[in-house]
Image 1 (cartoon, rainbow, N blue to C red):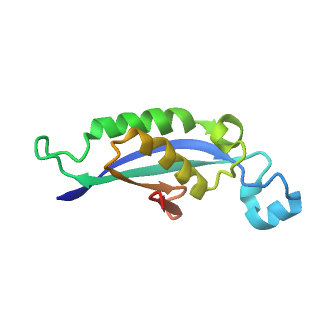
Image 2: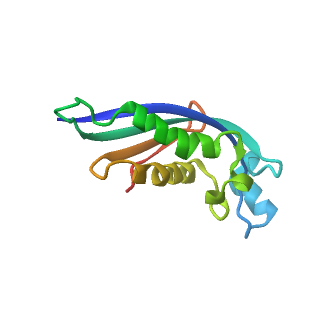
Length: 136
């Protein structure tokens, strides 16, 4: 029996969407107010969904405490109350769009999980704007 176990987490972070190789005008045209040179912030909501076979001995796909600890160490402690552009090496050369943030989170969490488990990251940048990434 395959089941998906999900953990909800959140972090607050600032960012600026822009490309260093574009003019300010081009960045403004593409990214609009998200190109603010003084940055802007979001209250990100994260859902990490882990799918796998239920262990017949424990009844778990994964112990949620283990998943919570991974998310805390790999996401919350590294991104919460940070400027993603300035404080996080993962975004030194990667525009911190919601798509890229979800991708980075996936690649921080997935190696910490047993290999047989699948992972899907859903990241809400706002209550109405969110992205999902499952490694494909």
